[in-house]
Length: 405
Image (cartoon, rainbow, N blue to C red; front, top):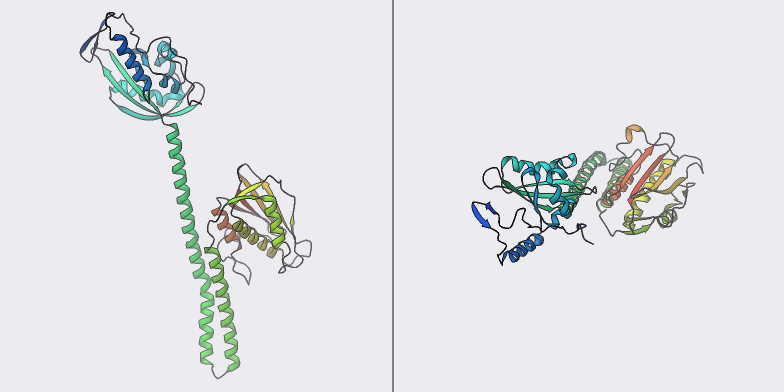
């Protein structure tokens, strides 16, 4: 299919003289006589016409009072008028009173008013059918002596080029943001590690020093060494959590059925021995057609982390009241996998920190669950949203990009 609906051929020759063939007219200081008896006149006219029609740009020659003297088919197609209309009504009638094309008009008027040559400008143009095109307009003002002049206008459609450029620009910006997010994430991780290891290291150093001072009291040394071992184990857990966190990298993305994803999550972590009496339930089965574009291992890692957090938030509740609900909802571009608990909720002062590495309100644990889930969602181009009400539970939504057919 042609990009532009080509207008019907003009009833007038592109180079049809506006005066009698024997008229003498001035052009760039030279005389040119067109004679009815010139055997080569039709050949020259045909050659010029074919050159104009073969040009990769639209051409229009405008004169005084906006009269259009010449126009090729490509120009007519780009602007959305037939050649007959352009030749008969002229530029000023067709364009000057349309405010949506003020930039297009200014690109031409500026050249006329200032007598410029080879001025280029890129502007948006709205066709009569409502379509918008991004055009490059190159204009030259030619004066023939006295007050007679012509304006030669070349028009190139740059719409596809601009769209490609915008896509490339958006891709580069997305890459820059991803790199910035990764740098910020690593910076936060480094700060969190520095903060978290301080206490265990101080504990190890302090109790090791005490043990060295009390070598004559074996029972005291044994007590100090137990504290040293506990702090060392805490450091080991932190090291393992850091290894898991930094090892989260983009994997193999593929189409994953949401129904299977939820069922596998329930099968895998639905009855957690660490949380007896807690059950993971599917609230409603999603449509078999719903699918996300994700890495299977990373999607499972994020869901497992969120479900584990939900189970921990429900600890202390009576059996049956502390069950966790998992379900899926769709939007135009995303599928939300939602995990809801009926636990204690997140205090308002903690809400802005819960995705930070090592943030935890528990005496035991690394506090990496939501940080891991957030990192996974960032790698997927998705999002993680938290809705909570202290005392009434928390809802965590993982937003995955929809898989396209």
